[in-house]
Length: 287
Image (tube, rainbow, N blue to C red; front, side, top):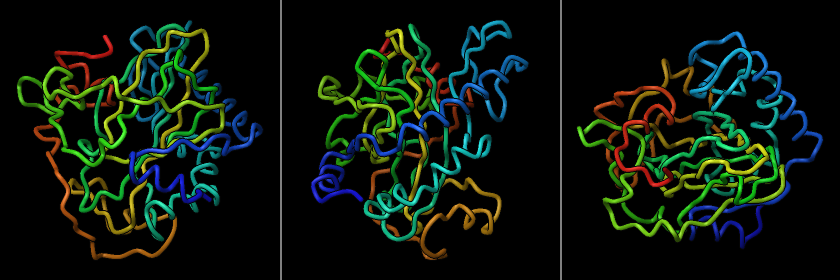
């Protein structure tokens, strides 16, 4: 369980890092699964439902930027997603009912794993209320050198910024020259492998390229309170939507609270992962 100070830090700063939540044996099982999945990408030539590939990917030297929906690819990630201790922490932050909405595993290879430009998750998937967050599980020791998640404290209490390109299309990134934001105020989510970060969907965050000789593999689960309904439908049926509930009871009564929203429309020209979306951003911070 989170202690009172950790809960308060999440509420005030919009994020909190809890060291060494998962045991080394579980972390190693996840690493082994990643290795198997990356090895299987040798036969893949383009992005698909599992892989987002790096620009230099080849059969001889696989380069995978992201594994999509990893909990549907290998059972160890489903096991971690439904870990009772993790769910108990989520209930402290989101309430009794918790829903999974998405999952991904971002891989930054040593010496050049790609940056992710500044953004708010809220820009991608606004809901009827903002009890929405992402959990980052570190599969490697995460240090400043290997491109950790960087978060601007208290930014979840501020505006929702434009994530649109110069032509008005959603691109999943903020123009770093546009809004006078002090990005130098960002704080890193670092810790030993097995540590976990929680960050609010409205918190401004990004990450630099990996310039170290060590990988940075980050498993990300996006969760929402059970009564937070997406403003853009991302499910095929009510039964499917309810099947994503991990704790608590289903309800057809959304909780609606004021929260600043800019819809991610018109949709991105380069549809796909955040890497594809952000390729349209003219002014890049991490370049």
